[in-house]
Each structure stands twice: as structure tokens, then as C-alpha cells.
Image (tube, rainbow, N blue to C red):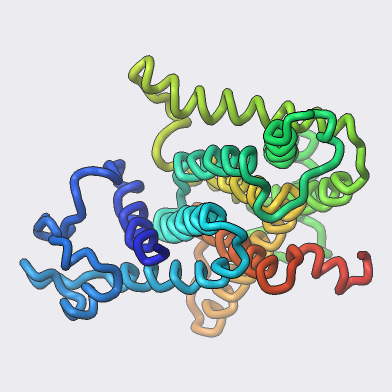
Length: 362
């Protein structure tokens, strides 16, 4: 099953950025457009039997095809014993497929597809409502909803609403004149790292401070705020995802700019784009809002380490360090997200719980 989804993940990685349908036509060679037979579609085995070449034109098959299929198998294997049912295992494999696809797409294009995250959020909404949450517990504050599936859905909406509302508020906050001036003062301070990444992307400070604040705030047990965020999450799911993205474009026959297959993350003033925020929404409904904020912080540090490493390499080779217009935040989020899920499988805790325990705060 994981091999099949690995093969489908390759279809997503190739076709979604090119605005091609993932359902039709069937798989074909990108070079000569030769339709692949059933024997040529067997994951991993076909690649080895064909020696990494197309049987028609002998063009080289990119190495990421078998690598993606192998990654899906290795990541899905631990979930066999973790899952309580085949349905839960299938849901986890689907999520892994979407996460790996988005990681590879972002690493190559520095843009993330909104549709893949939205599809994942909708699927998790149905799964959580009728089966149960994947990596977080149901909050007792929603027990007043007598129907179990409504209580589970409200809990799902709370995690989605908390993270999406907070990030949206943060984006608007960071665009105000006051915080832009504050950013200039922070980045010109002698105590800060004097590298171009922090100078041009001061929003990282806000994200770090705000994420830590929400992480602590969400553990305070303020019931009325949890209900408020559940309403926000429900509104986001219905209006932003189902109606605005999936339903209305089909009815009116048009798609506005924000609903392109790839969200534009090329703005040099920010590290995050719309696709990254939607991806964080998917993370929050799988692992919970607290884990989502912590994954965001770790992703920033991962990018920071990469850029610092790149600058050291440039200095060592006496080359000029050039900042690109955007950074693969989605790729970093995918790595930390998968690490968090693996930690839940093997140790039974989220990464942020392990870190708090290591620091003696839990």
C-alpha cells in the first residue's frame, strides 16, 4: 500500500507544479510521452528491471522516483503496529504522501500547493469526527456536545482555529508601521546575528516570540477561548477551504489569484507564504496546535542553520554569499513534522514535550 502511495506521490510532485491533472492521462514518460504499461508502473521493481531508463526512448528516469517510493515505505512501516485499524493506517499513509509531496515540491520550486494541504485538512476533519484524533487527545471542554462525532469535530476545529487565527493575526501585526520600525531596531542591534537572513526577514522574531506565547497560552485551560477558536476553525474550514477553494470555483467557473495550484512564496520580505500557512493548518489538525507552533519554531531554526552553513561554505571557498528570494520553509516543516510523528510512534510524546522535559519545565 505504501509503495502504491509512493508512486502516486511522484505523480503529485511532477504534475501539481505544472498544473496538470493527477488523474488523467495515465502515467507516461516525460521525455517521449510514451504511456507506461502495467509492468512499467510497478514501484521500485520497474525501475530496477528497466535499469533506470525508459523502455521506449532510453531516457534516464530521475532518481527521486524510487527514492520517494522507498521513503514512503520506510516511513509507513512504523505505523503498522501503531495504528488501531486499517482505516487509521490508511489515513496516516495518505498524510505521509501529502507531506512528502509538499516537501519535494517546495524544495524544488520554493512554493507550496494550497490544494494538497486543503485536501489533507478536509480528510482529517472527516476522520477525526467519525473515528478519532490521530496524535492529540479530545479536550473535555467539548463534552457538552452530546454527540461524540460533534465533540471530536469541535476539538479538531479548535486546533485548526487556534493556529490559523494566530498566524493570520501575526501576519497583520508584522505589517504595521510600529512593528516594522521595531524590526529595524532589533536587526540593527549589536546583540543580533549580523547576517542578511535576519536583517531581511525580521518577521522571524515575531513568529518565534508569538509561537512561544501561544504554546504556553494554549495550556492554560481557558474554556471559553477554546470554544471561540473552535468556531474560528469551523469557519475557516467551511468558508476558506470548502466554499472558497473547492465549491465556488466549480460553480462560477473561475479561480481567483489566491487559489492557484502553487501559493506565491516569492516575496522577499517574508519567510512564509500562503502555502506554508496552509501546510501548518494540516500539521495542527494531525499533531495539535501546540505541536504545530513548536514545529514552526524548529523549522525556522533548521532554515537558519542551513543558511549559516551556506555562508560558512562561501566564506571558506572565498565565494560571495547570495541570498535567494525565498526559502523552502515547506521542506523544513515536512522534515520536523515527520520527526514529530515518528517520536509519537516510538516514544509516545511530541517533540515539544520531550524538549520541555529536557529543560525541566514539564
